[in-house]
Image 1: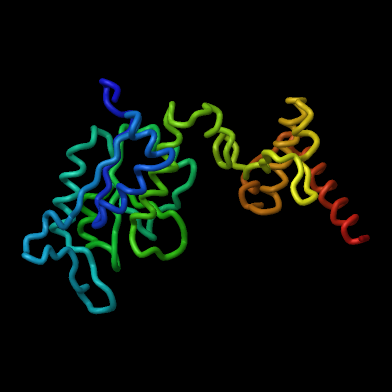
Image 2 (image 1 turned 90 degrees about the vertical axis):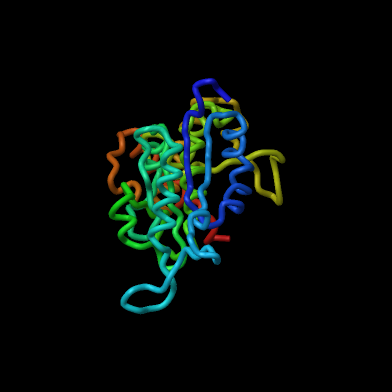
Length: 263
C-alpha cells in the first residue's frame, strides 16, 4: 500500500460482512484493494447488540408486517465505522427513498476521501437513526431487494473503477456507457473470430482507419441511445456533427429493415 494510504476509504455497515467481503475480493474492486488504491471495511451491528441473542431488529410501532432494525446497535456500528474514515466522508443510507444513484453520483463519490454505506434489511431502519446520523440516502433503482448489500456492491464497484490506476486502460472509464462527459449508451463491441454463424465484424472496424472507427462508434452510440434510452438524449444538446451521425444511423437502420422485409 502507498505510504499515504488508499485513494478511497469505504466502510459498510451490514449484517452480512462475510458475504460482502467475498464479493469485494474479486474483479476490478478486488485488484484495487489488493494494490492499495481503495480500502473497504465492514462493521456488523450484531457486535453491539446487548442481549444474549444479539438481537438487532424488532416489531414496528403502529403495527404492520416485517421487522425494523433497532437504533441502538446500528448507531454504535455507524459511529465505529465512521471513526475509521477520513474527514469529509459522508454517511449514506441505501434506501428506496434516496435519490437515484447514477454515473454522476459515482464520480462525485470517487472524488471524496471516503464514504460510509449503511445496508438496511427487513422493513428498514429506525427513522431516528437516519435523522441523527445519515447525511444522504441513495437508491440504485425502483425495485425491492432483500437488503442493501447488493446496492452497496453496486455503489462501490461503480465508484472504485473511476479511481486513477484501477483500470488497465486509462481511457476505459471514459469510453464506457455513461463514462465521459456525455450520457450515451455504449457502441457495439467485437472480437475474434471475424465471422460467426454468418455474422461478420463490421468492415470499418477491420480497416485500421482510426478516424472512421471513431466516427462509426460515435454514430452507433448515438443511435443506440436514441432507440433504447431516448430519455438520455432528451436533456442533451447535440452538435451539428452528432445530429448528422444520428440521421445517418436512422437512415441505415431503415434501409436494413426495408431490405429484410423484402426477403
